[in-house]
Length: 223
Image: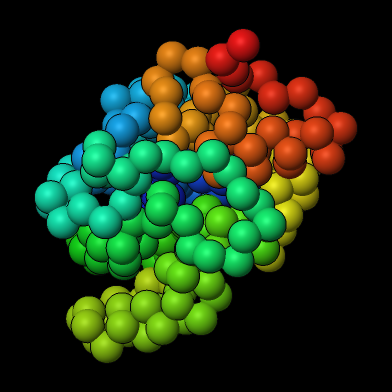
């Protein structure tokens, strides 16, 4: 087992399961949450803290990069762009894509990992059965890991771990159930903070995953 790993925890289903996996593979885990001016910022931060409490995580860091909201270009951060209804058959990158968000988050995680002397960063990116974000592809993480190698101290050794990147949402649900991941504490909706909308990309993928896994999603949805 590795000594210490940093886990990027948005509060959503994928990061919740990734945290459960990291817990089994490391002696200690540290949780990092990055807000970026998204619509459901407060609810996601609550989910992050609830999941961190569930795993009794002592090392936790919550930071804001709200400049991504000022840059705009995403329906998650720009009120003038409507959060579209899910269209899982479309090959186009959805409006919910936040330009180069994962690179910004991984940069923060790398800085913290180097200070803590952590040797891995876990991120719950999913390439298959997802919305097709370009910064969720395996080749992106391979390239960023090379950037870490070149841009940190010679003795620093940090790997990017993407344990669910090749899983479908149904497989992620099954893995979470196997590891007793606290799905009831997670939050995935792009629109709402009280009851999930059930129709945005994230909600639709999540609900389909639970259905195909033969399980019931424990969070509240708008009726």
